[in-house]
Image (cartoon, rainbow, N blue to C red; front, side, top):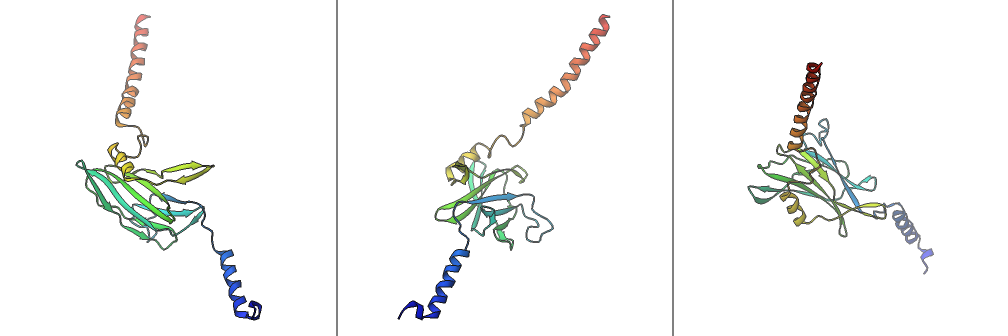
Length: 200
């Protein structure tokens, strides 16, 4: 008995091959993006601190997402779970504002894409609990941006150094120096002009 004599076998093979040809091929790394502010007019994201988008290339993909708030409170290391909900759209998640004590905090959001592949977003919070910076640790390979794993030691180091980067904005001392220069320059020019007038 040959396969050709069994119509249902041939039909099954055709359906299987069709599924293989139409199923998305998820080769390559995922990507994670942070959307702020969350849309207050969408029930699924209203009140969220931020919205997470999980991507494979340009497509939203429902990769599993987990998140924690990692902080230093009175010199002690603290880790708290984040409240994450699905929005109803594939690969889109809402993260509720965490209730955190005063301290230095970084939100760690991790996508798991299988076979050891994933992406992590690090979100720094300021003293008011608002987002002050976002980073997706990555490497560049053959012209592609590839997310890299983030270790607990790296997060500890970031917290000890006070956040993700010192380039989020000018420091308070820099602002003060600039403000002082703004006042001082017109004052010096005024004195020089006055001296010239007196010398005539």
